[in-house]
Length: 202
Ligand code: ZN
Image 1: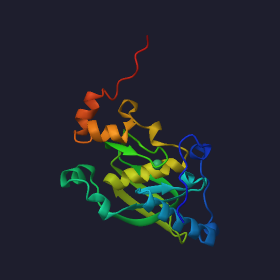
Image 2: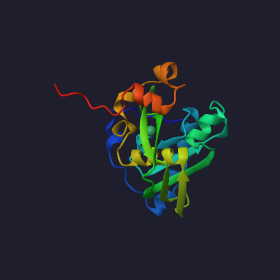
Image 3: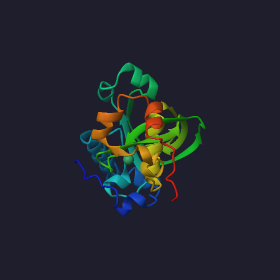
């Protein structure tokens, strides 16, 4: 079943999601939720979806970066983003236990802020501990776009949205992103938008 995706302004996106117990994880309710979130993410389409985005403040997110979604990007763009297909998986009670100080800047969007994007600086590499759908402990060492997805989804479970981390002068509609910025290198976009400038105090 495709679920409704909650939009920004709903308090559930600002709450700290609660951890799930092993019994809850293995329950039919959680299995059904995972199936529904998978379907909802595909229908959107998106590369990740966190429980708060379907109105439930639980520490659970689904992730999948499909081969077919990479077709719209040139080989150069894929290399620059360090983006490769990621098979479907669920992360429950995740924790970022290590991250690189080396960061990458790219435009990103969110299904809960439909129609907008902004440049967000994120660690290029993260190590994440989590439980899978059988409540088994797992560890991921992720890099590139996958590391970005993990940081974005885990942010949702802490009540954070990309707009809290974005370079706010780069925020804009997807249509304007396509018209004005998509074809440009991130460094030139940042320069043209004077992305780190703070508002002047008058
Ligand atoms: Zn999001």
